[in-house]
Image (cartoon, rainbow, N blue to C red; front, top):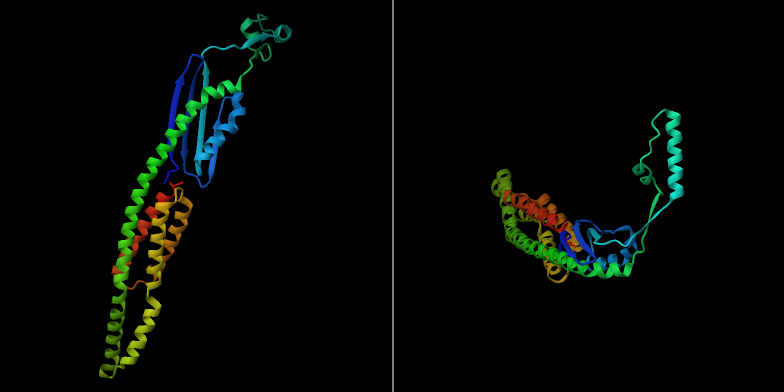
Length: 288
């Protein structure tokens, strides 16, 4: 099981350049992947995107790839015609406004198009430099997510064990409900009819109460959902969406049990179970 939250960074220096790769992710319903590359390396985006999507199914993932060359083979080409045009234009503005017509060289060369950089980028060369760093960071990133995922898995298993104990309490309480209803109805009839209370009428009223308030079906379904969640945790490497659905079903059953509860013991336990389910649901939001 894997968490959607992870982080990894690595930097490597060579004679040619310093390459750094950073990958970080947070929760997201779907895969939201952003690759940040220097503009001249944009042709490599699809390649690194495919590497991420092979390993990551869900989450908001940001990838930062930086390359700083130690020596540049860029050719700087001056456009003297543009420089002269800028100088003449600045002088005319100075004459028209009454400002000094002193034109500094720094002002001229800072204008767009005066100095042009001509550089050819060997994309394949940069790819070869970046790839080993990227692969190392991706491995660390996934290991970080898997480590966090295992921690969440253990926590969820503990919570499922607690839910199972609560379901067992409901199961043990269910037979007691019949005796409790019978006692309540018998006491009511005897209060009204004294010794003339009809046993058959008492049984009929008890049965009606059980039909209305029995929680046996909800207990069976709750146990089924607990078993399904355990199976997903054990067998599904990316169970996040399925677990979220199961959690919703669990919550539905416990709400029904709570609406039928006519015992303080059941009511108190329903509150505890709902708290556990909410904790489970929060954890599930982090699972891929």
